[in-house]
Length: 416
Image 1 (tube, rainbow, N blue to C red):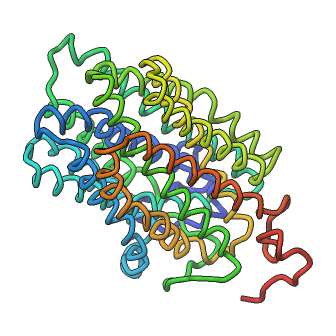
Image 2: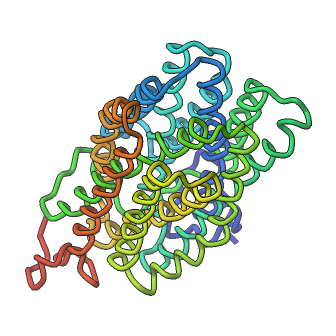
């Protein structure tokens, strides 16, 4: 038996199987996957009602709020500099703590500028955590197991969101909760989990030393392009789908949270099957299915305005939209297959920056479009989904180094 190391010890990843299951890297990934949505999902669930009821936001203000929220994502490449002084595992926990703290104090600053500042702080925590966490997932999970494990990680995150939303649905009206109480509880719980993770887990040392400089490789161009489109598509849902449910249909906090509750329950049940499907059918087929589905959903969103469809159809489309979004982990496994193992950390940072290029200007710009023609926003989303589908068609059936796209078949494996 190997003596379990202390939390500050560097422990080789190759010996992780000698640790108790609950102290292995995979267990830490599951724990962090649960801690993040406790804060972020709660913030998301209450956001539209909070800003409309407390600060009187319209489509223009919500657009600017999400533009501010996405700026740290655009600057995620700065994580490479942070990694010069902090290990990825430490960065993930520090960023997660910032997310929890910012969420806890959100309701203390109910003005327009106050909400923007707290949004910026929570966004820094969220995006730097996701950058480090994505890199750790690709380093700590074996390629053969990645689809299955990532599907289970998505399910764990959905389960944590489910618990958070369930508590809001059951207790909001019954206990007369307010925004401050819920935000403090969610952020505080995330902080407690961070403290536990910092004390209970060793510092894992990966098998491949990561590059500490920015990495941009021509052979990754399709991955970069898909990241750009994924970021643009995501903004349509994150910014305007939920806002529509409140503005157009007048959904209250308990109703909106109930919808999210159903959504995450389905995600928790279906995500492991998504992982198995990814392992069986491959990234090209899974991502192609995702973007075909998204095209249909965005066109149907427009139908809510063209044909006067009601709240039931709107709720179904909202759930389908989020369900398709859960398939996005296939982009991680695509890069894991084609990328140099030493590129995982710097490329995760670069990918997050690329993912957020559109996110910085789209919310504000589309906020003005929303004020005039909300259906045009969703038509634009459908066009983005079609273009992304065309890009997905360029993924080879069996991607790998030297076979990153259908154009690189037969070429030698790059020496870089």
